Every structure is written in structure tokens, then in C-alpha cells.
Length: 461
Image 1: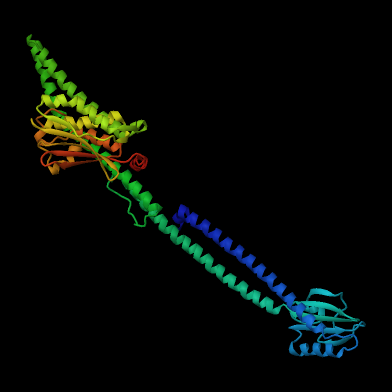
Image 2: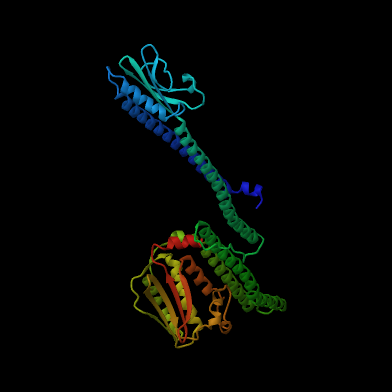
């Protein structure tokens, strides 16, 4: 990835922002720790200096200065002027003991430069001045050890800061490149789709992270888009194929009517045949339009609780006599009260299409059963028959618009009944399945429990 492209990428900018924030936080916390450590060491130094001063001062007696002088000189013999300061001066400023002559200053604790005592070097001293009778006792310690320790800490923090900066920027660039590569894969897939490669899909990393979840949603949407586009292509081809014959018949009928009118014959029967062909064509387009409206999902806003038992009972009452006239039987297997979230009119239409399909394509003596069964938290609506059934290799194709099984081409119909059933099932996030009823066909529609439709609908959008 080129640097200019990387700098414009959102993952890089986010990584850089959090990297800078992390670095600033580390430096700030390091500075606070350094100052706290410095203050603690200074406090410890004052305590140590006070303790040393107290030990030396305890040897003082007004009528005996020898112990004090001997103690002070013993400390002087153990340290150089650069390490420790010791001085005992009389009221006239004459040094009685120690390694330097202190200037007359009030009792207290002070920080002095080495030049103040006529010494060379750059390390400052912390001194404590105590009045012992007429004399002045000065005890001091160099800051050298403390400064050396603080220097080690500061160098350590500096190297740690270098490592943190390197890790933050390097890790940020690495993570940004990985994230950008995945986003580039999304962009490439969408570009492929925009130029007509509808089979292109976003590769998944298998981590189930947010980008994988978004990619799965996009792939699901592309699957649906691909299916819709393929469906449109199939519909266009099927319309051209299926409507060509009735349009030709209507043209031939009208041509006969024109010739009959010229010859003075009665052309009313021919015009009625042409109108029947026109009505059939109109009915086909109306069914296609209805399927498209259902697939648009607008009617999902009208969903409410629907008792499927009432729907099946209504269909049984309407089609029992129709089936009897055809020498068939429609049976409702005592359904329980089962509620789903949906559109009652469309659910009724779905069941009607399934029953009409069985009545139309099954021979005399067929038994058509409707039932409702609870299964693994779902509601299963079944419409089965013991007729001729549908071959296994044809079961997926029958949901295509205008598709008709070869043996059913001699029966009335447009090949849109099961397409409408599939559209209604998809609208309700229900799964439809065709199976062998041994003999005959079993159609199962599995509805989700009430409450789970929202998540399913969002997934399908």
C-alpha cells in the first residue's frame, strides 16, 4: 500500500490518533512519576540529614566540646568534601572542627551551591544548621547520589518512551494496513458488483469480528441482490417464452375476426376468445406485479398477530365443496390455536394457493390435508396430498416465476402460484420446503416464534 493512500485511510488515522494519545499519556505519566520520585528522594534526604545532625548534636555538652569535635572529625575522615559537609564554628567564625568553614547563617535547612563554600563541581548540597550554645553546627549531604539515581530513572524512561513510540506507531501502521486491506477487499467486491460481477463476494477472515460480521451482512445482501437480478432475468426470459404463445393466438384470432368481418360472418365468438386470451395475459401481469409488491416488503408494516388455525379453518370451509366437486377431499387435522406475526390476507392467500395447486394438479380421489405442528419452538404449517407429487429435481424450480412442470402444462394456470407462496413466506421470514409425501407432495412452511421476526427481517433487508 502506498504511503499517500495509507495516510488517507481511516484506520491509519484512527491508529495514529490512538498512538499519539497513548504516547502523550505515557510521557505525562512518566513525568509525574519522575517528579514524585524526586520529591520522595528529597524528603528521604532531609530525614537522613536531620537524623545525622541529631546524632552529632547529641554528643555536645556545654562544658565539654571534645566529644563533639571528635565525632565531627570522625565523619570528616570518612567522606570527602564532595560527599559530605561538616563544620563547627565559634561565635567569631573560627572553625573548631570539620572540613569547611561555614558562614554565619540562621539555624534551618538550606540548599547551597558548591561555590558558596569555595568548592569546585556542580553538585549542590543540602545542609542543616543547628545552634549549639554559642557555636554553630553545620551538617550537609551532596545531591550527587540522588541526581545519579534520577538520571538513571530519566534515561530508563527515555528508552521506554522510544520503545513505546516505536511500538505504538509501528503497531498502528501494521493494524491500519491490515484493516485497510480488509476494507479494500470490501471496496473491490462492491466495484465488481457495480460492473455486473454479481457472483463476487467479500472474503471472510473467520475471526467473527466486527468486519467479518459486516462482510457477512454485505454478502447476504449481495446473495439476495444476485437472486433478485437472476430472478428478473429469468422472469424476462419466461415472460417472453410463456406469453409469446397466447399473444400469437390472440393475433391469429384477431386476424380471423378481421377476415370474418370482411366476409360478413359472425365474429363475436372470435372476439370473445381474444378477450379471454387478453384476460389471461392481464392476470399473469397482475400476479407478477403482486409478487413484486410483496417482495418489496412494504406490507411488513401491517403485521399483527394472526391465528393460523383461523386461516386454515376458513380455507377448509371454502374449498371443501370445491374439492368434492372435483372428486377430492380437503381435511383439516384439528389445529391448535397458533399465533404468528404477519399479514392475515397474505397468509390466507398462501394457503389458498397451496390448496388450489393440489386440487388443480392432483387426480380424482386425492386427499389433501392441512395441519399445524409445533417443532423446536417454531410453528410448522403443512399442506400435503397423496397425488402425483413433484420430482425431486423439479422442486426448487417450481418456485420460479412462470415455471411449470412438464406434466402440468396441460392444466390451467400461469406458473405463478408457488412463486407467490415463496414471496409471502419470505416476507414473513418463514422457511418453505417441499418433500415427498410417499406418495404425493408435502409442503412445509416453518414460521419463527413471535419476537424473532424483527431480527430476521433486519437480516433480510
